[in-house]
Image (tube, rainbow over the protein chains, first blue to last red):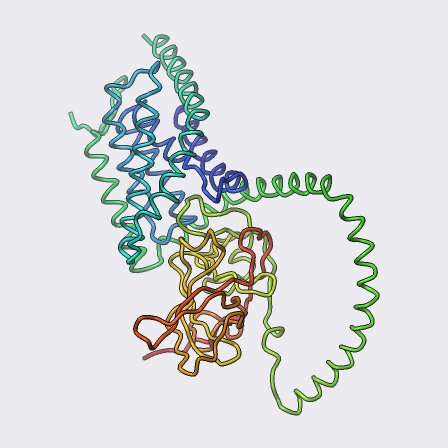
Length: 172
Length: 290
């Protein structure tokens, strides 16, 4: 229960930061994607189910406030969470390389998906422009934020796991 | 034992692939529903309105307070100079104002004679504050702190500083979303003020950094439209009220088909530094098509 509440709060906080705080400190109009960091981290830390659920709710929140069609972002985030969950088997807490790689690949995939589904289908063929001016800058900014945010998420997860283990032992 | 019944001590789990399938189907259903009807939007908009919007408003208030303080410190000296200059200007303007009021009196009398309505000033407007921007890098939409309880409806026009900002694309009880005219998926039917030639003004992500928007399909066989001409919303648009200033023609070029022209427009509104806007609560008259 505690885990659910804290996860919900994390999603809420990241969404708030991304929509209200980061636009004020954006570089060249580009803001990082905190929701991808959160979805991917929960995917590879906790497994497929957590990744999917976190992704689904992150996407749904974006859909209701900023999306044209409900369920579009939810679907993209859902699959990103699921695929990241597949890597939970080779994830070690001490290793920072795998999380960063996964988050970068997730953000790139997210950018490419949006380009393909929303821009290319409307006849915007200038892929190089969108790739170099939107997708890559967003990715780089996201890495910078990951370096700060990811240890925090990991810390919260570790604390929760310690608490859960203690409570499990009590009942045995 | 059925997998759904939860026994004491045994944790009930759903297999990952099954959950993925269920959520995928749910997303696709929601997409189809929103395409077909708007049934699902309203309750969700209400929920979000009470969970997220108050916090966004709080963050925005704190942010604008901080910005205000930092600007105060920087600007005190320049403000003193400006104050001096403005005082002189006020004296000149008061003089002009008296003259203009006389003119206006004359104008309204002449208008009465011509039975013309003043269009732009007659619209009812509501002020609103921007509380957050789009959380991605692809579109430029933003949220306002007024919603359906303040009488806001979708497709109402939004203006700021005398120019068109965009239109309301979603409404919750205490918030509404504006799709700006510089947004990549937005098109406005427009015309030049002087010659009344119609054109389509569309937002383009590539041009956003340069601060211009594109226009196309301008038929100007007389070659009368020039750079610097005023562009306003046209009277044949179904969502925008007529004669709202969009911007000024920046560059104009003849298309390859030799019939139409296209180019760039400098918007009248500074979209980078926008914090308050006006929502026009009058709507464009709709004609029911049988």
